[in-house]
Length: 326
Ligand code: UT7
Image (tube, rainbow, N blue to C red; front, side):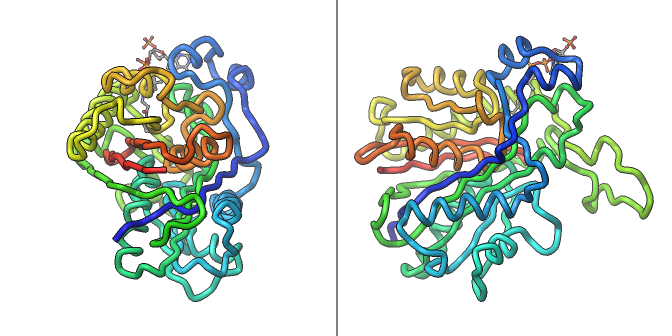
């Protein structure tokens, strides 16, 4: 069964935090952050919930698809920073869209959540070709950032990306040609948000520790990220008999400009085919590729006839690639 993305949208909080703002909080510099990551600013929630950002992105995707919310049959929310453990964030996005009676479920594959959700939506559409699946990838990472830890606090931002997936070539009519999604739990300790989970429960009155926040071995993550995204993209191209010349654009997880450029180089892609907006949003985890796709559609970077390859990498580790035909 073919599956299509018929609309995309994104939303970020209005409030921005620049590298110079961060210089006031931790021992860092604009020069260090730009040189090591490419990031210049990030959008940070001022009380907006993951479901608020997600509902806004969903509205934009519905408008892009030319649909109203009541057309939606399933809601998937990719997030590792949900509003709460229970209820899940998908039900709260549905509530904000005034939707009842639909399957609404969260999916946590960290930064790979958008691609994992697209594949899940594809499966739902295969089960029922009339399904209209709302995929929302939304994060308020700032709620789990240790603002005293310079090695992580400069990297992340908040935001949401959304897509409407259906079985008919309508709206944008972008076909999801193929998906390769993979994981390896042996790397679990290298990138974590532990505190509050069953591996690190808190007791009443106990103050949260550093493990409540994002902790990362940046150097190791960097190496495996470049290797995994390059490898999965090469296998995706090989299984369709495609070369890099057959790609019009390449969108990697927006974590770090150096990682994006390194993967682009290893794949032999010319720089102009390698999408980047990490400079303005930082690493928004699951939302990153969703925001990239929606922003690129809105400004004409992606358009009819193009073949676009998406790839992500995140905690778990999880990674993958999705091939799109516009
Ligand atoms: O979304 C999931 C995927 N996540 C990622 O892809 C992130 C992957 N990792 C990275 O992007 C990079 O490893 C970082 C940007 C996190 C770090 O860059 P790096 O080139 O690997 O730097 P490093 O960790 O090797 O640190 C170099 C130095 C250290 O000082 P010493 O030990 O050499 O004296 C750090 O303490 O830079 C120091 N440092 C900083 N200095 C100023 C670390 N963070 C900062 C900072 N400002 N914010």
